[in-house]
Length: 195
Image 1 (cartoon, rainbow, N blue to C red):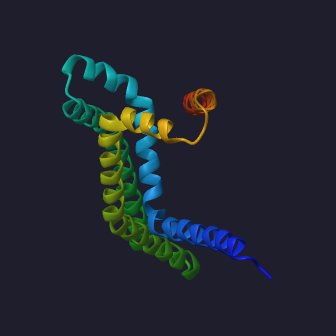
Image 2 (image 1 turned 135 degrees about the vertical axis):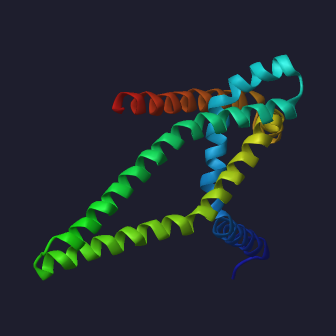
């Protein structure tokens, strides 16, 4: 027969696993924006520290960093989107020209019609996905603001509350920082080399 202590232990583990699973299902749509914010803060935190050194106000420094990151992302993105819009317009015009001016056999004509339909399907899906994308961006910006502003205190509190000896905490955090730097800068270097 199972003792009460064993029953309570396994019940707690089961409830904890169930809670973790339910929490995952609730937050799964927010995981990518949250991690994006964390990664961006990790890369831009040295610049934030320099700005905060001169301004001496964490809120204003965080807002300045968010504006700089938004500009850094949106200016190249503007040109890329403009290029894609021009490409899609010319592609659509070419398809319309082919459909209206050339006499194809029915198979090719049906293929061109399917291309036009899929083109409009992709454009419609893009427009429908915009609200979710904007919510993801807002979550990322929200995370970044508070991580810039309070990230250092959060990290200190997290480190302090870990149930490990001080030397083990320091070793784990130092190793984590080394691995994180290696991975992050390795990804950036690989992206630069690939173009």
